[in-house]
Length: 95
Image (cartoon, rainbow, N blue to C red; front, side, top):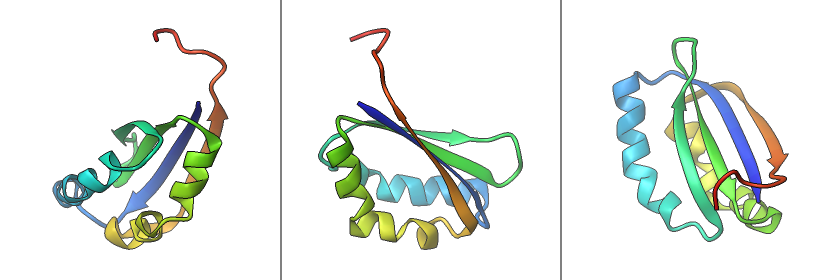
């Protein structure tokens, strides 16, 4: 498994951001290899993120090359460049 953490600042209000996320949720649910996605609110106003749990680096790579990924910045009106971190999972606490 691999974890991807994306943090970004948006021009959207929280209400607008939640609406966009809800509209896009079915497309994320349909992604092959995406085991879980957490939508998160960060400490600073206007800062949000996503924590993705992927079954493999290949699934993450496929997602990163998809049209869905290409539309994220526009859909969420991202200000600046998002911050992205990748982590390999050594083992889960629960299976």
